[in-house]
Amino acid sequence: MDKPAHTDQQLHPLIRDRWSPRAFSCQPIEDTALYSLLEAARWAPSCFNEQPWRFVVASRQDEAAFGKLLSCLNESNRRWAQRAGVLVLATASKSFARNGKPNRHALHDLGLAVAQLSIQATALGLRVHQMAGFSIERVRELYGIPDAFDPVTVIAIGYPGVPDDLPEDLRDRETQQRERKPLAEIAFVGVWDQPMPALVTKGEK
Image (tube, rainbow, N blue to C red):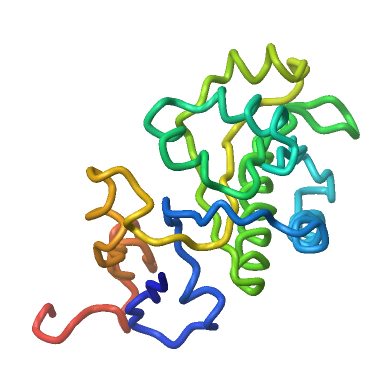
């Protein structure tokens, strides 16, 4: 199922067509495709080139590994994420390796890495859905994640399924039109909350 964004400006198709479905097909993801996604993440920019991201990967071909990470998700996410081809736990270092000082940019940098992974996935006909609903305590326990790293998100990756694959209460959400705030609400100039002039619609002067 495709759901291209209805954009105000022309965008690259890989950005326009990227979205976060819940319906996956259960089709395994080939190793070459999976490594391509991780390579895209590896080449993301980061503050001082610290590359603060670390990933724990669980492919559905390895039933035990997949079930282990799946068990860390909230029940509401397990219902649909169980059909993904791969689950990935994304973590970020709390401090700079270069000097041990707190790295307040690490979450930003991890976001860049996952964004590049998502765009690469779209190019390969895959879909990505990031989840906040998981147990931080459980992933720390099961994977031995050191205190120096924060578990941030679990990412479901897979080939597209169809809404009928989903529990009934999620089907309508899968087909709803995608929405975003208008640019005038997020891009300012001069002072806070002052929209860029080109974004002010006619009649608002």
